[in-house]
Image (cartoon, rainbow, N blue to C red; front, side, top):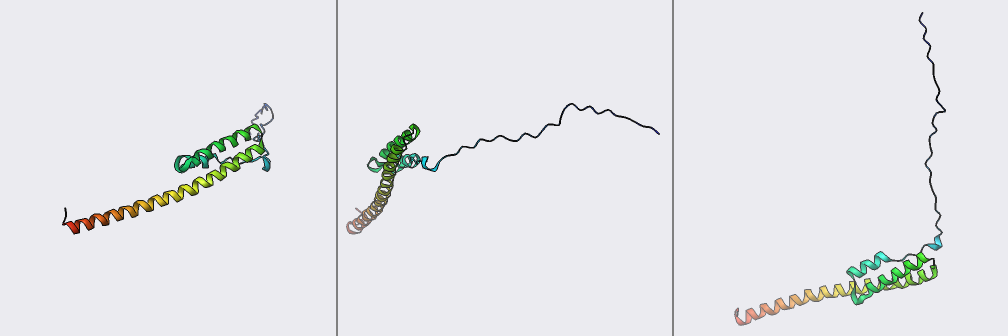
Length: 125
């Protein structure tokens, strides 16, 4: 009978599975102040009737600066003003755009009717 012996060399303890390290950052709910920068930028680019979008954008940037400086009361004040200006810019922009579209469409219909009446009345010239 053939007998083999093998020598097992243990080089160290088996490697432990490393747990991923994580960092938890707690943000208090009262420190979150929305600054409405994206909404203000949209109103500045697309709905800038009476420059309300630009004014809202400037107040939004002021609110973000105050928030970064740690002045939450000032940030809340500027953010509130920016929100109000954004609402007015959006409402006025939509109303004026709809009014413009209605006036252009009815004006083109009136011009078309006037030209067709002139063609009928004067015989083409």
